[in-house]
Length: 256
Image (cartoon, rainbow, N blue to C red; front, top):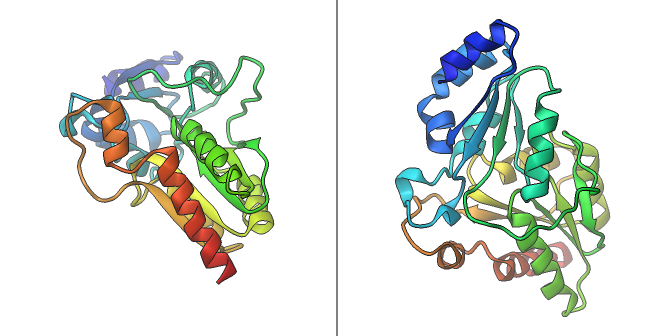
């Protein structure tokens, strides 16, 4: 499929290919890297079934490493939309980007946190809620969980900035650095392995420019399992409650 898409792009088409993330970015990683990205071919990849919220399909079909293995490939744009509206926008906009684009999404229904009018620009993060005490930077459905966390923290008198960083590569460094400088503490949230993933991308950028205390919410070096999506989110500590707890930790580090 990936090689066929490469051929179609060389014939002047803009091919869109899509399947489970463990297949299109995992099993076909060499074709994505060498055949598509090395030649900067105009192929768009829909990487589905990301995260443990896939549910009953279990570890073999839950893509937890796909952000890591795509963001490290040169010439590839990586987008992780927060909801249905952003997925539509990302799909349409990807056709106007010259070169490989990977759009990562899950399977289960997720809360809609944007509208058709919500700004969406590839390479630009959006501040969904302003705050001064800590920044919650998230992608995918973890944007919703971060908004939940901000509400929990607000009840404790803590002002949390929530940033929807839907474009993992290229990062909106300006917005991220401003958050680091102005709030002095960061919690990243992703439904993905913390090693090499979204949080690592934020840490790489922040640590070299404006280092602040950080915590990463995500899968902690383990495989997924079969189960109810909501139960799995709780089991792997990916909920708004978990993000709020991490925020209290980094705020304490900042004060200490």
